Image 1 (cartoon, rainbow, N blue to C red):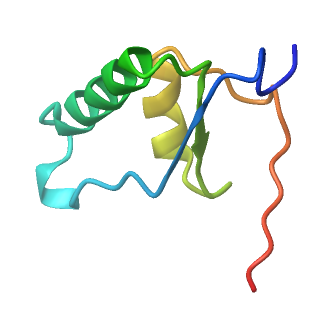
Image 2 (image 1 turned 30 degrees about the horizontal axis):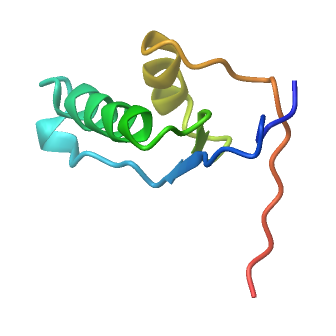
Length: 79
């Protein structure tokens, strides 16, 4: 399926980081739920997470929230 769907808006989330001393307290989940609700209210098609390949623990967190990995390939170029 096309990444942008039927020309609806979509959300790209990059650098969602919770300070290490506050992790595992549910703060990341609360932030993601807030963003998802905002996206729904604004008729967004989907949410993309951008995460460094080496952040394996973060990837497990995103998967626990229902996000799928390995469905797209992302590219980035710093200017």
